[in-house]
Image 1: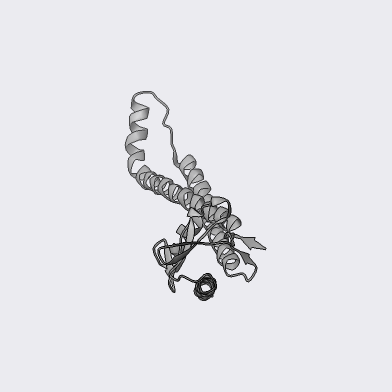
Image 2: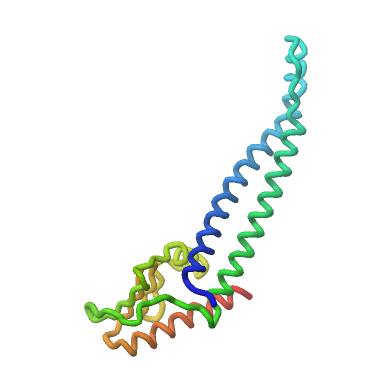
Length: 181
């Protein structure tokens, strides 16, 4: 069984890994730049060190080792993001998905509002889901607004609101299923 709480955590992990991956990419750029410059500077630096009676510290091996470590970490993180994204899509499209809405909605301004149980918020989940769908948050699908804190349906009837909610979630799942393939 999959629920929004697990998906929230998975989306948070994907976001954290992406940020770390960006940091690794930046560090790798710097190391690559230094590796490129080193052969150009080596003759001058080694001659200068010799002239002043100081040992020359050749950083080639250290930089190559650092580069290899960063590339390995980049590949590991990249694979983790891909795997977690596939799991997110798979779980989000699962017929076993549990969405923790309070069963009793509130009615306001001609709309039906469903809150998440225990006033839970799912910021990471909706941010990542919006990105996958190519939409901005909050998601609006078939007169249903899905946000990190509530679901608002533009009808006045609770039964019709439930139907529209089911239809909009089905639409989201179909779109994600297409993206999965």
